[in-house]
Image (tube, rainbow, N blue to C red; front, side):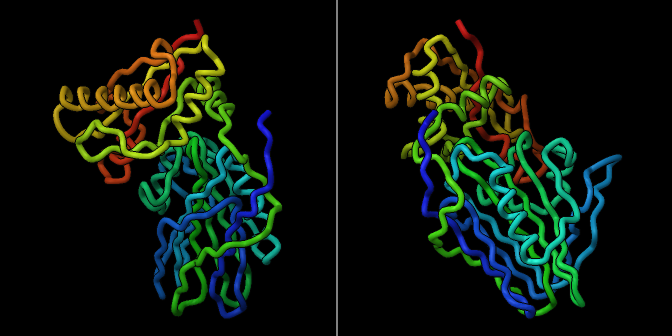
Length: 314
């Protein structure tokens, strides 16, 4: 078991409102990725799971703020991210209207029927996300929704707040010294092991490539560090890196590009992390295995990826 320590890392989030500010704290080091504020707008607040082609929603109106953060909370589950925020909302007078996890939300259909920022501002793993909507009763009710997900390297939170009509103040993240939540102080190959041995695959969502290029971006990638640690700790495990593209262009060209990207990642693992070449293969699937719709920019971004598959234990 890798030792953990409490990180002096949280974010204080202030939502302006005439009844006083609501303050929440995010676990881990929070990096704001996007914020939007409208003085008067409407928001369809999900209050039930997707079923029979419909997403139950409550139409709300007022000052609408939307904010997203990337959290340095490697190894924390989506429940560990959600639970403290849910407790803080309850303490501020909010009551939960609806809460769900992945398939119980409605999976793919639920995620794409909700208002979520596109990648890279907000990442939603279609196999691991949680959602919560809540109301603060009053003469002018206030509403909050949380979409929470994670990659192998980070956590992601999007918060939508609807308050009384008027100037909408975007949520601002500031440092905090609270240490009530702990996160790993180093990479944990057990996270990658769980994904591979439970699901048979893991998306390496933090990898970056220039458009149309097979060259892996500069810098260290947490997902590759975790994968390398897993392979070194399990020399009997063999994996295949599989490149994927969106559906733009010719299939043959996309398969070639996706395989080149997988080979680029393989070379990075072998040359920079000393992973034995015999443990890692590389293939390309082009656009034949999408995980999202190719009809939207968000969906195409999700489909451009490299995944790792556990292919052998010999």
